[in-house]
Image (tube, rainbow, N blue to C red; front, side, top):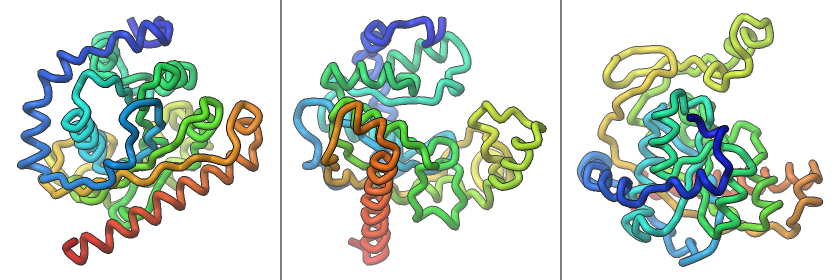
Length: 278
């Protein structure tokens, strides 16, 4: 059974706090000793109510900064407070994978399901940049990449919820992407030589990392042990909201750029502070 067979409400109910709790000792080991995570900005998160977290992540399919943020969340708010993360449906390749993801609070990145979670008053986490973001080249590690995807803006406007951006530093060194071959893949997609409907074909990364050494392709990897800094940014409340605002293309574009600039400024500051040892 896949996510598409579920109604949103029943899918939300599959989240299993006991399963999440059972995984925490392993994740906390990675948090404290392997990635030595440091975070700030947690005072920006409300004690209750729905919010849309919008992040930029790094480090290939392992995306250790994303996972370490979730560990941070559970350490601060406990596993009982409902929170959900959106995943690309293509990652959920089997019924078993779909069921396990649902128990951990992972939802397919579909507007109706994300909206149902927000209407329950639950925080929802999304990484709009997707595959373009996690495999961006090392030379672009300090650049926010949201890949032009604006569905998260429309969702926040329709549901009238604030956006709280997340930025991180360090995970780009857990997998050293030399190039993503995005231009080449774009040409191959246009010529019909590869499946243009699959997000994974947007890039073909060439990278240095474990366990492969020098390798190519969007394969799973083992992150190198690097210190990760995470920042929870100040909330963004838009002047307008509702369905009419979400259908206004120019307004959506302006909101998207507002979020991107907000995140870029926060990441720039994080880079400066890390270099100063602060």
